Every structure is written in structure tokens, then in C-alpha cells.
Length: 154
Image (cartoon, one colour):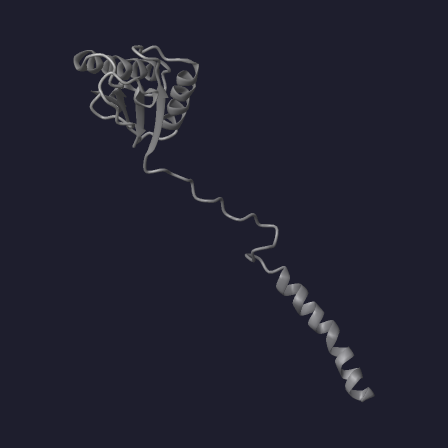
């Protein structure tokens, strides 16, 4: 057994030298190599919403922040298009609501373009008046969830 042990101890320095040489071979990936970056996340579509006071198309502070967020998202994606849709609740007459929803959409569009990050040709507007409501109501019933502008990024 001592002869066999002597033969093994004589081989160990050679094995260690071979392992060391293998670790320093050029072109080998080392443990310190950082992993590749994750793929960039992209969304197929995003939806933002601004709310309005009854009978108004004035954009409040929260609405301005939302428009700035939309501007930043679209600025980072040169292929993105924005569609803005103005809506109203069922208070007032239908024609006045149609005009109000148009004014809301136009106000949001103008504010978005004024920030200077998005060209006007990438922004479309539409309006529905009281015809497309999130919460169905009877005529004359105020509903804040229907006094909105939806902003779609696609």
C-alpha cells in the first residue's frame, strides 16, 4: 500500500499543474463575466386616463402629471402613436356633451404636444360625448368616472 500511495503522491503535482493551465486558457469565460442585460421590456399598448370636473375641460395638476408621464413614455419609443378620446357623463344635452368631449380631447392633445417631445403627426384625437360611458347612467345623472379623457399609446 505504501508503494501505491507513493505513486499517487507523485502524480498530484502534475494533475494540479494541468488544472491550473486549463483555467488560464485564453478565450475561456471566467466567473467574473457579468451576465448579458435583460431584454428591454415593451408594451403592446398602454392606457392612461385624466378626469375632469363637471362641465369643464380644464386640466388639473394630476392631469398634467399624467400628460408628462405619457410624453416620457412616447418619447422613449419612436414608433409609438397616441390616441386621445374625450368623453362626458350624461348631464346636459347630447350636443353640448359632444362639444365638451371634443374640447377635453383637444386640451389634452395641445398640452401633450406643447411639451415638445411628441410631434403632432403622432397624436390622434377622437370624442364620444356621452355615448361611450364606463358607468352607464340615465340622462341627467352625473358620474365622475365618465368625465374623462382616455389616452392610448400603441
